Image (cartoon, rainbow, N blue to C red; front, side):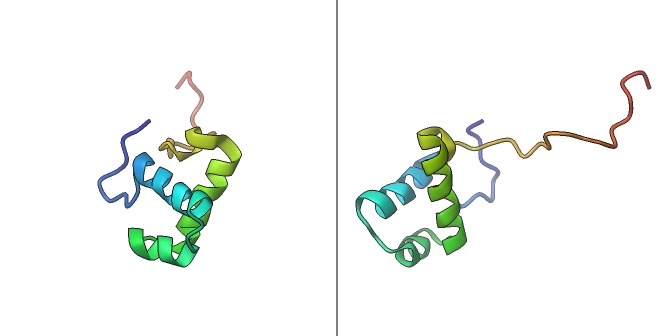
Length: 76
């Protein structure tokens, strides 16, 4: 899923730039956040996802819940 919602501040390309600046260029998290107009928490989130899953971790993911415990049975 590579279709961010209309208000998304980052795209997979921008996320790759964030990772590049943090890891390869060793820029400060504060400077990266300021440059892209995002929070430091968001920068740390994308770094963590990159470290966990590599480039695939920078792709947009579905926000659909994994389970719906109160979902009606299929026979209804």
